[in-house]
Length: 115
Length: 110
Image 1 (cartoon, chains in turn purple, green):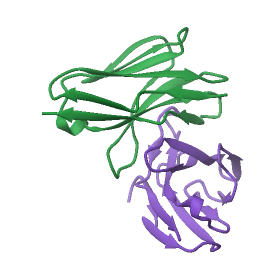
Image 2: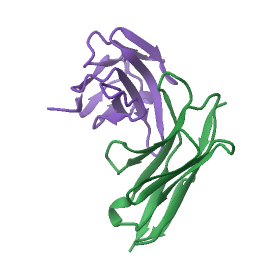
Image 3: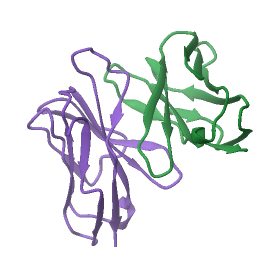
Image 4: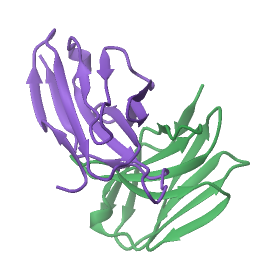
């Protein structure tokens, strides 16, 4: 499927478990982002990546790990999930051949509940 | 600190015009974006302003005044499907990060 996809769409886990959220895009966009959105709030940047093997912290990186070995994939790992990480997680991408870096394209989101 | 302010909720009537304001305070400025998000959905891009003035795209227009650190989104001929949350976001650096406002919930009444 063309575009940007996330998996799983819904996840329930327990405190202390490791969880990995997947993000895949087919546009060869250079930039990719991970956001969390808590109920009734805006988006907060967790991590972003400018290219394969280049990642950097955003506003709220603590408790999260990312990697980007391939341009199209940008997984987000919660090393030891906490209840405060219950949120909706969005992956986004931007850039590409046309160089339109000012528009971000979002995946459908992963709704994560930590019990 | 860096912050964006926008009203939490705006109510308008179908067919009318509504303006959603956004003021920002950031360390740098490379442009102001607007996104729409329906309940349960993902944000979708509406517009981007890097320079002062008005940008028009169909029923939606976006305005920017860099000297006032202010912008707005103007929605005309409101339709029920425009009921959504609208977010302003500022690109404050050259690395394409966005800083987001808390969002404005637009309620449209028939």
